[in-house]
Amino acid sequence: MIKIGITGSLASGKTTAARIFAGTKYPLFNADKEVQNIYNQKDFKSKISKKFKIKSLKNIKSEIKKIIINNKILIKDIEKIIHPLVRKKIKIFIKKNKKKKLIFFEIPLLIESKLMKDYDIIIFINSKKNIRLKRYLKRGKNKEIFNLLDKRQLLPSKKIKFCDYVINNNKDLKKLKRIIKSIKNKI
Image (cartoon, rainbow, N blue to C red; front, top):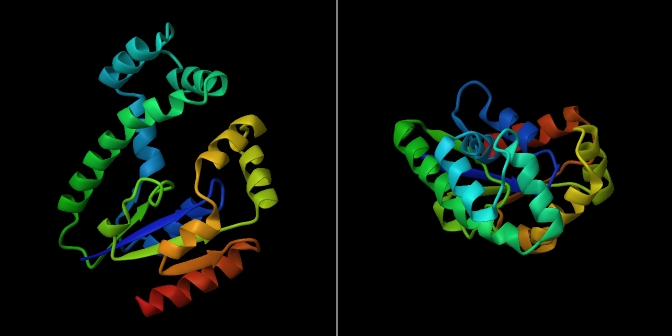
């Protein structure tokens, strides 16, 4: 089994690239989706609401964003709760797919979380900041959160050092697919 980690900056096109890489043939673990699932779990909501004194559990993610904007230091405390839960999900995913030739992992903070040794191949999706911001805003999200989250990540120049392949995703989908096909042929 070859474990392939796909990472990159915020709104660089990681999800699109990961889906193209995995296609319908290979399993894909999406860390962001798992985080969303974690946010919906009762025990997580309970733990977070107690720790950060959140009154409304209805939309806990937006409550957490408010906390982060007002106190940027607390993001580390939130990550200390979420990241171990995601790692647990990764282990389950690997066990479930141990007979597959390739398995893909889309993990935005793969390098920041020092998970490089866990993957046989690491692919970095790179994109210019202005393009990433435009994509992020198109999703109905706000610039303040973009800047906050973007600053939490290592600079692309530092991340690239840990990667086997770098894909510059500043053009169209057609070009992205061509680059991915070329890399897949080498794997």
